[in-house]
View 1 (cartoon, helix red, strand yellow):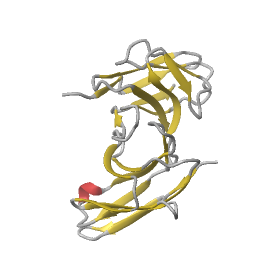
View 2 (cartoon, chains in turn blue, red):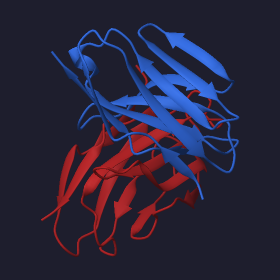
View 3 (spheres, one colour):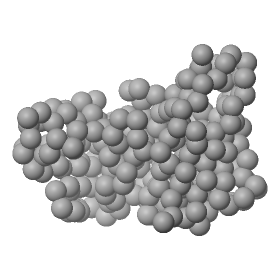
Length: 110
Length: 113
């Protein structure tokens, strides 16, 4: 079956760094996405990895290792507004259908 | 500006009623999707459509129905056969390859009363 695992919750202090890990086992792989979701709102796109390595976008970076079925999202210089759920999603088919992890709730404390 | 609109934001359903959730997009996306989100669980795919007049069941299609009569619209009906419909429902759209990721609607929270 298909499986995407990420931690349920992480807590960090404002200004710190947090790394959210995601491991996946899927029947195919055509890309991995990270989304941010605030409570009661729609998920918003953060990053996309299809090749191994690190993608950096401002305070957010995402890493992918296809051979290990592993990705992480790195949030730097945490701000209170970063308190949200972070969803890992794998595109396992050649078109747009994604498989989502359960999400990691990040709590940023003062 | 292009986007995807879901309505209503909140919906209450009585036992035995069918209700329809609206999803409209003006992004010219070919593919549209309906997901259900429950606390502590990932988004689960209900139905998806790659082209007008065609749609496919996702992982949890039982008790739901959809139509895709227009490219812009993909309404979801929650039927009385769905025994546990209380959830947050998200509609999304994408280009066919999905390489640009999903654009999500703002969601509909359905509660059975």
